[in-house]
Image (cartoon, rainbow, N blue to C red; front, side, top):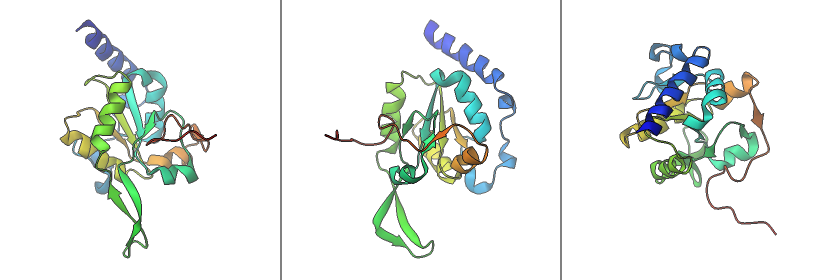
Length: 185
């Protein structure tokens, strides 16, 4: 109980240290296609600042397909890549002129595992980033259905992160990547 109370106090304290966090984005300022059922939003600058002061009390996930990360890299403070959707090279989306995305059926269970691995509790935050904020909203909704209450989407996503010149690396850390990676000999 004391540990939970301490974590809650530390989370509240860290939130007050982040400029603008107390005034995180209002739902009215978020495009409809980027809104989630929980209504918790950060822009990339707020997410970076939040993780800088309270990364021990939050799980920062990049929900893009690993193939996307290969070409773009990922935000340095991201804890793990857990894709919400996969690129399915066997299905073509004629309307969008690209390969179709299929929902990752293991998404919620994989997030639960990462949450537990990091030693987090129900009071701790999850921050979700994707390319532009649309997939992040869908990922937040899936986690809300699973019972998570403190899940924030980064509404400007990778695009905002890069445009704001925040810490980013094209060199991927294999311990953060999704799936089983065989050792290279």
